Every structure is written in structure tokens, then in C-alpha cells.
Amino acid sequence: MNGFDIVMVIAIILFARLGVRLVTRYIKMKKDSKNDEDASDIS
Image (cartoon, rainbow, N blue to C red; front, side, top):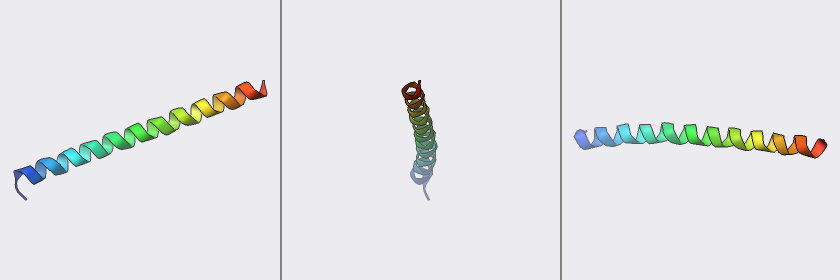
């Protein structure tokens, strides 16, 4: 592995962590908005 490979591995790991965080946040927001819609339908 030369220096460029090491930089690429670090970049991939950082992007993967960021992507997982965004996906989990998006799913959480989607779930919360769905629950809000269900609550408004009941009342």
C-alpha cells in the first residue's frame, strides 16, 4: 500500500460513516412524520 491507498481507505471509511448517519437520521425522521400523520388521522 502506498500513501494514496491509505488516503483512499480513510476517505471511504469517513464517507461510509457519514452515509450511515444520514440514512439512520432520514429513516428516523420518516418514521416520526408517519406517526404524526397517523395521530392526526385518529383525532
